[in-house]
Image (cartoon, rainbow, N blue to C red; front, top):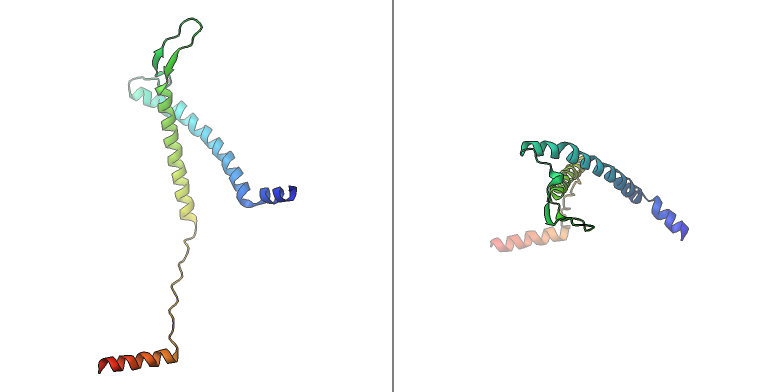
Length: 131
């Protein structure tokens, strides 16, 4: 069982997947920082000095020991922007990888060369048809 597991792990696809997951997680943090620290503040200034992280719809205000119940739609907007940027970058990466791959040349279908008998029979058929 250990040998099978070792063979499974040492295959290229599993290692590529592991590297992809690690790089994807790091890239996700970079995009999250880009959205939270650069894009959303600029967007907030453009839209009238709005802080998106503070946007919420309070359903039940805090009272005593009970915390506030609110819908944090500002945070949701940030996450949507984050997702759109990630999806766009992944789309560009897939497009680039597909462009870098060599196109698979389609083989032309082989033209069947008729045998001598078939060629003679076709000639006879054509002659009979013309008469």
